[in-house]
Length: 123
Picture 1 (spheres, rainbow, N blue to C red):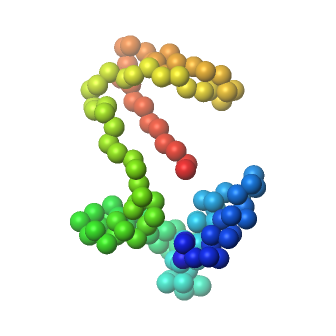
Picture 2 (picture 1 turned 45 degrees about the vertical axis):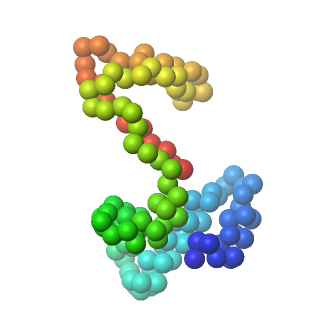
């Protein structure tokens, strides 16, 4: 479905828009898939649970290679395990604060307290 001509045309049509993103289109597509299998009378919670299963099937069924080939983002995932391990000293990097100003990661650290860094990306 994601690679269908219709979906690809829709993705191309929103490329320059600021009010909608490709992830919105894919989220709607995934929701439609779940509703198709659960039925139109599915509750919000059932749909959310279905989406959670759909999006994490490659982890839930890690030993089943078929699940690793179903999702494009899993099949073409270039992410790899990084070099840092628990106990390694944190590397100081420049970050942008909410005002767009450059700040040092370690400038937020207190040497007398443990350091926990959580990071993520929407895309």
